[in-house]
Length: 469
Image (cartoon, rainbow, N blue to C red; front, side, top):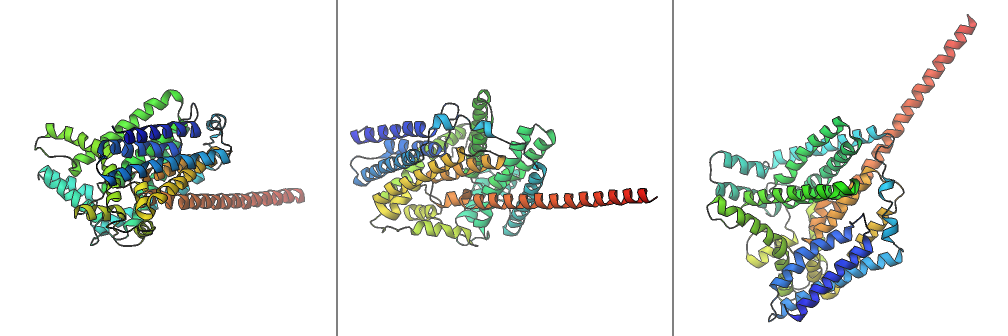
């Protein structure tokens, strides 16, 4: 490695150590900032060290941009810690003692969320029914009918692209329904699973498992690997927060292996590997493709941005983020990552520039440093505000874990990823559930008060009648 590569490596490792000290404590080794940075380190730094060519000025500029992102992000996290006087060892130690899952009126809350879950599931069923079906099931049906696996893979890939990246698509309003399958259903299912596990009530646990089946089907249904991996990681975070230290390692290994298995199976179904025509030799290619997706794909996408911006493509000055908001509007949408892939290769697909690369495409190196600072401020601010709550109910854990994963998703793509994974939908859903739950409780108390008053009046009349007799 060159001296500049060594500088990037040790700066990144120092940043990881600083985040470990600034945001975690013994017995609580998690924070949104640490999660984001860990994914960033694996998907950007490792690839940059392997791919950057010293004879290419633009590659060297990309390495400088990544280093500015590291420094800016750590500076933002440190600024929040200093300003809020956050002491992880003291403040994180007592978080688990403030968990309160068996709360008053819990059946009312569960019933409210169950109604929301059924409504969201019904909307998704209607969406796929009128839009052309679930791509994954079409691919499996083709395979079951005796066609070659390559034919099924091509069909699944085409249907997946049609739903996600084609302008002329039969799937209308994808942005709205992405919120349902990527954010809202996982939020409900995660809450049900925590209640079922913590309360140790068999009926609730079975109901939670039953609710997870259609949610996983909708996550896997488009043929995308990331939604399911994100849900698994969110559940791993929640499990880490609520389980004892003895169970944490076992639980993390279980979720890690399950997530890797799902990712590998979906890679096989999608044909994301080099075909050899032999399953025994194709399987190693699947895992080689996964390793390439994790360590090199994002780095290539980011480096490419430093090659085409600001020449021949001019800086976008924030337009890529505004454009991604179009994913909320009815009709198909081509996000920035899809535009970049088409710009580079002339085909339909997605490149993988993480947020620092997109920051550069909008505002140059200054945008990378300042944007990384803001992102560090947001993630550490969310962490500090969460751990200082007086009482933690299930929704606070689920929202914390899923928002952490939402921002971590930004380490793999543009702003459209966090939007799809709940940056907007989850806070609105949380507020809606709280308001509806309180309304149901108030109506229940009002009805109970009327019933009690009616009973008291009946008792008084009976007493008066008895005295008169």
